[in-house]
Length: 352
Image 1 (cartoon, one colour):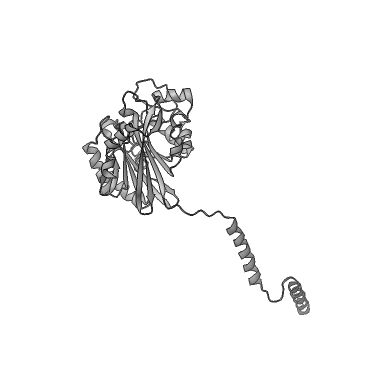
Image 2: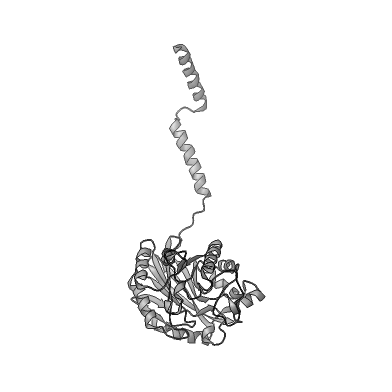
């Protein structure tokens, strides 16, 4: 038996000698093969250098019902976005206030104050680069729990995040995060109960939206800052058709900045309001209408699109584009004396 084992060992050594050149060992071969494979993988990978700046675009109220819906039915889902889509595509993140549930249901008649958008419009919002939408407003709950559930479903299917509403109170008040190229943003959104039915609010067991509440605002910002670099607040508040913010808007926005928010964006008045620079942070009290059928005044046809550039340290700069709504549904960026008047009303020259 010993002779057989000894003979087998000699044969095995001979075979190995034929395969492995003298001076090499198994460790070297293994390492060499591993190195070759690693180099191959390295060469085939597309390494993208992280961005040093991120562009966040924010717009005003987006209402895709009533008169706007009629224009969409006649001209196609893309009609409201045709003149602004190229600019929207320049944002890494695009945010707006969606002033309508997306849900099947009855026809919305002219002059109604209940809104509903046809399913399918969420795809157009996604096509036009909307990343996240606030649902914290006085129209999200117009079609009850069914409308809310439908809205959540269609936005999720389109890959659009939302904030300020949820399946329950915890979800409605929770931050929504967007992580892009190493920049992490947290969004929080709140609606003013002064003009919203109380039953639209989320509870522990029912879907709804987040109401403006100072304790919940502070708690939300504290939570968000543990995970995000920058916290953005959306505030649906103020007096309709008034050029200047109310004391309630100011108190809530100042508290947001005091608690650690980087930026506050306002909606609801349907006209553009002033910008305030507070403790070296910016508050845009109202961006006015972005898509809306309020053609009855010049001011309700005007709105602002703002692009913010963030670097690793914070907000670096911003630019404002003034839009004017045409044909009940179609915002168009304008560069004219009219745009200058709107910018002056916002107080741009005073703070820039």
